[in-house]
Length: 122
Image 1 (cartoon, rainbow, N blue to C red):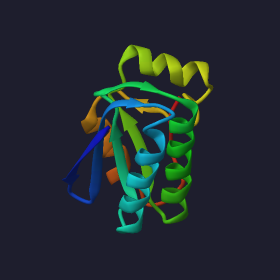
Image 2: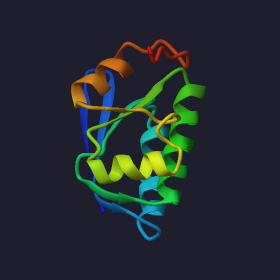
Image 3: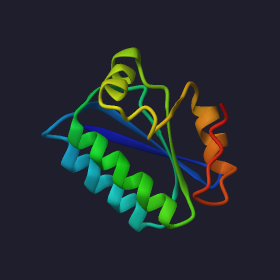
């Protein structure tokens, strides 16, 4: 699995590519830990190129969400394909980890963040 990183102002955008499965989820988690260790707490994870995510991958995302909130940051996910969105819904993660339709919407939600409080609208 490859993860590409890009800066969008104060927001770090990560784009994992491929499957986040039982083999690659650990590597993905280690990569996310390095990003957090580097002081990046406003993160967008663009799921456009992710074809599958397992429960361990979901766990890694929840850890990152909690870590960013503890540091007055925020995590947003964006651009998941229909199959990956379905996995989020089946696992009950859709409420915990909302997915924005566009990268720009994800960046805007994180860039405007002043802390862990979150307005999800209706």
